[in-house]
Image 1 (tube, rainbow, N blue to C red):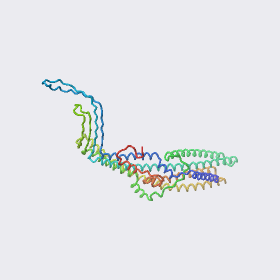
Image 2 (cartoon, rainbow, N blue to C red):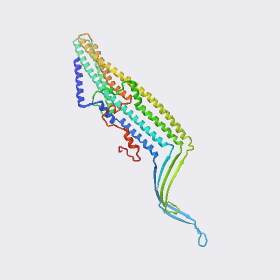
Image 3 (cartoon, rainbow, N blue to C red):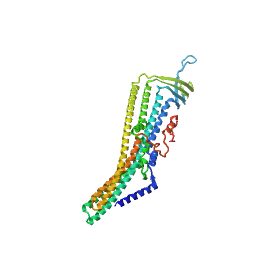
Image 4 (cartoon, helix red, strand yellow):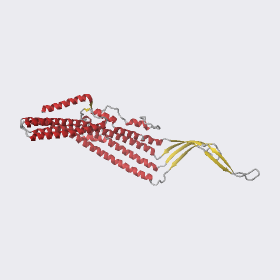
Length: 469
């Protein structure tokens, strides 16, 4: 029985090796594909590109506003004119004069703001803070996607291992049932032994069905995150070489680099600039307007046929009282600034808690893996001994069944511990803010949000995006 079990495991391992050689997929390759094609990450990149457009919109406040007006039409005019005085001194009766006019006009107007209470400058600075905050949010989503990819990858591997462990268990129980049946027919055991073997086999079949269902679900999750169904996955290793050696060091790295903390800090900057923007409504505004126009047949008195006008006008608008709107907006923006500061403190606290939880989980995963490995070795020795003792009549069929169940559970715990060990290392790297394609050395082109930012920052016109859409 022991030799047959070893043979089954050996055959499965050989199939694993052949499959890996034919179509092997590594965790690094899966992470690369997730980085390149995950829909959530691509959607976040699009959101960041939209945020970049806040900069040229704010900068437009420094630029002139130019308008061109063209008009043309048809106009019928009838003027009633006084008669005047005849040559003999008598009054002439009034008369009318009618004409069909074809008026048209063209004008060009240029408005330039000279001073608006520093509103434009603060709008630009607020937009820049929002862009920087958006980049940190993009980094956070990248971390989340990569961690989800690791979890999905290791989930498939773990469930595949659990399926094979349960199949081995079912095969063992089938053979034990057959052996018990033959011993019963020979009078060596009782019907109770046969019933126990049959019951344990059916339990094993049910357990196999459950893990097969979990495998199908994990494969579907993998396809959603990575972009394609999993092939034969190569077991992954923890990334301890990328992790800090001490918890205090991890905490310090998180405070300096975690995207949630940095993003919240930039949100505070944006909220401060929003206060300055709201205060600009309390200042006077100064502007200048230049215009030039030409019109034909617009004089309904028929005194002229063309008129040319050019002028430059300066204007100053001093707010006196607007019903309290501007003051309320200033108070409102100050409260939002207070909210942003509170959220920054909360982000720092949450990040530190995440590091602590990830650190102790990572350390616990190491201990659990070592314990599970020792448990499997001991359970294998115990099963072998119980089998030999059962053949000598010193153990019952139930003892063999219990020992086999202990071994199956130990193998399952080992598989789960191996999965948790790898996932915990990546979770800790995410908690300190360093789970990204650069640290993981993924073989993929870098998506740099700075590229799009530079492409649109100083764009004065054009509706096509830099990608040509």
